[in-house]
Image (tube, rainbow, N blue to C red; front, top):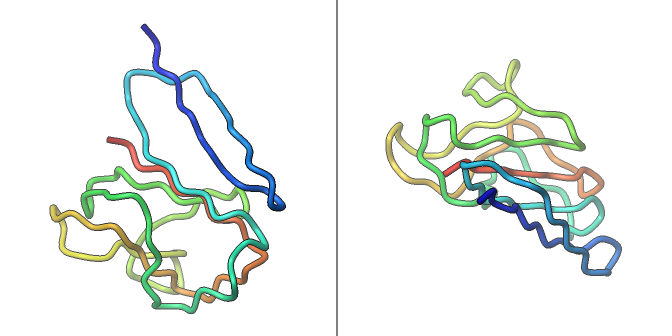
Length: 110
């Protein structure tokens, strides 16, 4: 039986539920909609995401719908995973400030 991915989010103060057909892989997701955070996420400040294994390729992150690449070089990459390869983590750090007007969507394949 195919799985269903269910996403709950709040947009402009209104709850919204999405149901999408899934495959055999399950995902944990996190959405921080634009204009719902109190302020800027400062560069280098840990940002909470669903749990993942560092360096496993499980984590994907989008800023305003654009898939971002992960890496240590701040001139090339948007964010970095936090922790040692092979260990569990639940945060990332951005290499530049992320204004509250930017949507952040994170998907972790498990």
